[in-house]
Amino acid sequence: MNHNRLLESAKSHSSQTKGGLLWKCWKELSDLARHNRVVLLWVPGHSGIKGDEKADELARKGSSASYIGPEPAVGVSKTMVRSQVKEWVNAQHKEYWNNITRHQHGKIFIRESSAKLTRELLTLSRNKLRIIAGLLTGHCALKAHLIRMGLYNGDPNCRLCGRGAESAYHILCECEALDHRRQTVYGRPSMSPAEYSAHPAAGLYRLVQGSRVLESVL
Ligand SMILES: [Zn+2]
Image (tube, rainbow, N blue to C red; front, side, top):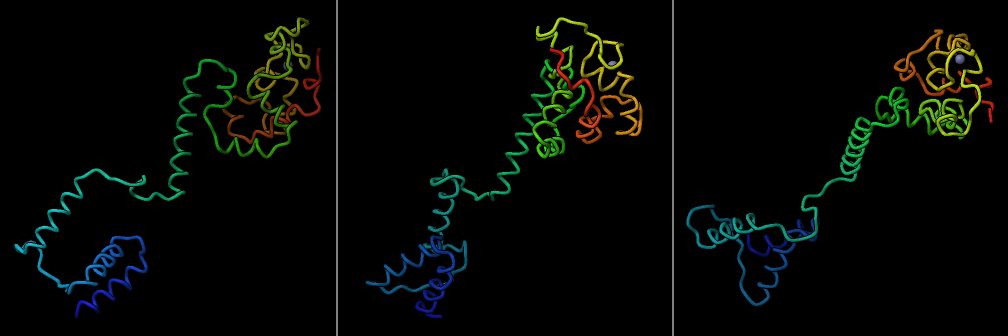
């Protein structure tokens, strides 16, 4: 194969990888060939041929030098970046939630960050979301929270059963006045925080929907 054919072959291949090393080689050789006789030859490697030894030496030098150019040097797909960022955010979120010492009530009902729970909550109406988030975090218009906030100083007992402080924990796990509703919604009269976690959050709304605990005591 003469050098013109080889050059043509390199040119045709490099057209598929424009900007690549082969393209640059082809261009350099073409420039050289304008005023010189250029011959492309296959030579055996590591056999003492001067040009080949020089090429090896330059290649070694190039590979040991630090990379110069736009980062990242090795292309990474958007999907990979997205999944790595997501993984990192989830790990940070989990660590934050596990280490936080406040929100005792919330940590009992939301044991760890859950993409499933997030997805479900984001499909709910604002009103349902407000009520469910209030029950899960304890930050709602139940008497215990209003007393803690200094907004209410009347009878602290549950307005449904009258037995125990009206907290979100009481409403969800202790209030006997809601036994029948729990039975209807969850198929059992009493539920533990862990059992609530295993069910869709929308059940919490159904548990208190239309009951007096959603009315204001202020
Ligand atoms: Zn009660």
